[in-house]
Length: 260
Image (cartoon, rainbow, N blue to C red; front, top):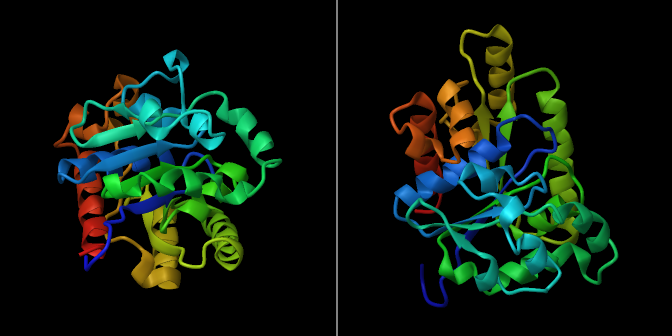
């Protein structure tokens, strides 16, 4: 690490296309890194709050959320919650995040609000994983400005590459204006079924375009991954031996290897 204060790594999990296992990836990558005894914060920036409920936290009953951090109403320590996964904390979403898109647009230094909010706490975590909303609005822009890297879950289907190009264009704009150091953590293929010709085709295409940026770990279409959130558990706690859980453990190992 060299001298100086340890800075945790921030990874934003983003894809403006919904239904690509974005939240599943944020939850299970976080839990897998925590299992490797890293100190992890899962930051739920999606107004739907699925990452929060996916680790067993009901947003409707919460007194405060990441929204309070964004508008400077509460401090981080007042908002964060311990999850049942050792080493994994959550900064929960709240329904009030829906209004944040509009309110942030009017604030001074609006693109860097999240970055400023995370500045003080970076050093207390090894990894901060941000689950972005499925859009390219202000919340995602704040995440891309605050983050070190971008992890892109990609479902192998029609138009996947078009969506990816749009996201990469947004990333370049963010690099130009707000976050010159932003890099790609990697592209992870999700909901993959090797028996499906289209899945295989898109996978080959993505790999030929982005070779070294595509994770070797592929997340399969897996019933256990689909079931776990309804129990409010990361798949590791729901069924650690399932193919889905093993795929996310493999993904976490690759992420850890990037930093060694």
